[in-house]
Image 1 (cartoon, rainbow, N blue to C red):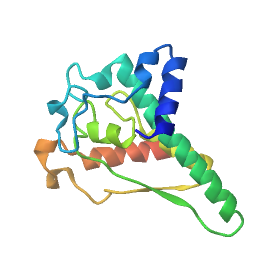
Image 2 (image 1 turned 30 degrees about the vertical axis):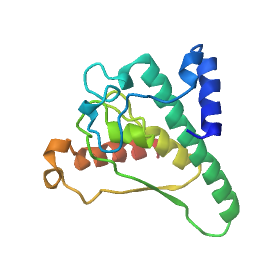
Image 3 (image 1 turned 90 degrees about the vertical axis):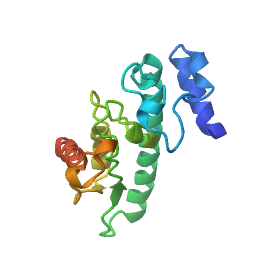
Length: 169
């Protein structure tokens, strides 16, 4: 919660007609080691992530990261223009709790990806605009090799990302 992010959040909340949403992020999202069902924000049924406020906050947060990536790629492509350097961006394969409705680890990382929203297509489109390679992790992982109680699904995640990169060309 640095001042510039809070300032941006405040402006976005005011622009959406909900200034009360601009002072902080979700206060009920738990901490690093909480499982989604241990929190009010990320729980499957009635979780804040699936509310009007959750949609506002997660859209803003995700867009902030997309805008940051766009700025970095603009600088990188102008720096390496006509040098033969190929730019790639490593995108983390966050497969823990992928089978949970909220996809809490992905949301926390800024990937607004849920069962009802493709969070990887906007990333792929941003990379495509700059001619950057989408370098993805967890390609080698198998679902059955991961902790099943954590609803890990790296194979499903890889399929989703492959479709997003195909759509974004």
